[in-house]
Structures are given as C-alpha cells and as structure tokens.
Length: 296
Ligand code: GLU
Image (cartoon, rainbow, N blue to C red; front, side):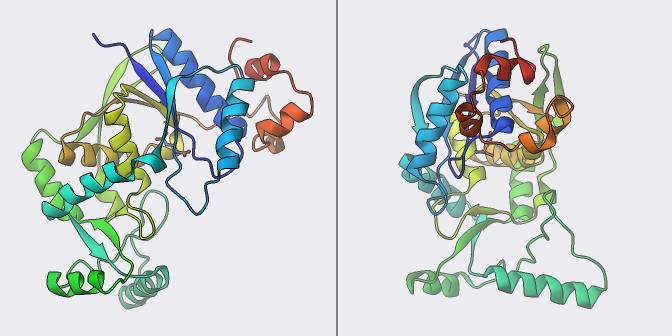
C-alpha cells in the first residue's frame, strides 16, 4: 500500500488564525496516526488578494506552531498552465461554456426570475442563487467572436451535460469515501447538481478553487484530505470533476469548525485572532496546541 499523503492548503489572503492552526494540527495529527506524510500547498490563485507577505507569514506561523512539512512547498500560482490544460479538455468535451455575465447582470436576472415566479431562486449550498444559465444558450460562433474581441469571460460547467457524462463514466453513481479519526470509512453519495452551473474558470484567472484543488490533489498524490466542514458541500463538485477528468478521488475528513469543537475553551473573540498576534503577545505554542486539543 502506498504511504498516505496529507496536505494543508491555506490561501494567503490574510494571516492564519486559530481556525487554521486547528486544521493544520489535525492534519499533522492524523498523518502521524496513519503513518503518512504531510505537505503544504499555498493556494494563491487569487492574484488580486494574495500577497507574498501573507505567504511568508504562513510559513513562519506554521513553523512557530511546531509544524513540519515535507518539501517542496507547492504554490498554485506557478501551475496555471496545468489548469489551462484541464480547461481545454473540458471545453473540447463540451462540458463547460463561456459566460460573459457580470455580477450585476446575474443579480438582475435572478431578481427578475424571482419577481416572475413569485418564489425565491434556488440557492447553492453556500447560499448564493444558482446561475440562471443566461449564457448557456449562446450561439458558439457569437461566443467565440466575443472572446476574440477581448470580452472577459468565465467558464461554467454545464451541469446537466456533466451529470449525463458522469452517469456514463460511473453508472453506479457519484460518491466519495469519508474517513474518521479511527480510520473508519463510510461511503458518501455526492450531489453536485445542487451547485448548478458553477464557475470552473474565473474571469480574471485561468482556474477556480475547485479545478485547482482537484488538479493538485491528484498531481501531488494526496490520499487524505482533512479540511473544515465549510468545504464539505464543495466536495460534491470536486468528485464530479474528478470523474469527468479521470482523476482519483482521495479520502475526505471534514472537521467541525473550531468554534464548535474548541469554542468552549476559547473566548469567541480569540478564534479569529491571528497566530502572529498571539505570538507577539507572548503565547506559548505548546500551550496553544494543548488548548486546541493536541498534545503539547
Ligand atoms: N485553500 C482553501 C482555504 O484556505 C482550502 C482548500 C482545501 O483544503 O481544499 O479555504
């Protein structure tokens, strides 16, 4: 059996706080328990919000917490060409389509539909209204002309087509395996349809979180994904992309957010306190680890 591989994958768009510390420490704890390795991946695709100062701070804060990662550190911003290749495959398969709509236009279309039907628009698991498929029916030649004229566009998954293709590839249905801290594995059915025609490539960058994370977990050979419950619903979309692109599906563990698990021991206001600030205030990393439920 191959050695388990875990990863901690923060986005450098701010300082790490105790919620991140908890997730990183849990990754390290489970990697050790299952005899695995742990790597660090900096998810810096959002070039407008991610800065090198946060990148450096992440490395410093994690080291201060006592965490060690196997080299090398991967930075997603260095792999845009890999994501472009996957996008090309999805486009050639007709599973994504260009979408030129602005946020404002989408909001207006949603509001118009709500007014027409008298009921609230269906929402995705994050609470955002599902995309009303304005651009899904665009004539391909017209779309191509607009792209060539330089109009910004996103690529959205055509969920109906993608589900049909997934049903052909995996007639047994989409699912993934969840593992718990004792290594017990449970099958979880995936329901990506609840995301509607989600954005797979954003307008300003040649990927999205979903595409990059699925690509990198496969490219790096990640076997065990440990991340917060806030990303659990997104896993359904990840499983769909893995199926369409022929990528392996790792095992997943979505942990409760720290406000639930360690909330009693932490004053609420401290949960979003940057680790850097705690360090400057003289906090002891061993005590912090113990407070979060890990051996000092
Ligand atoms: N980069 C994501 C975040 O910081 C986490 C991605 C993941 O663990 O899949 O929220």
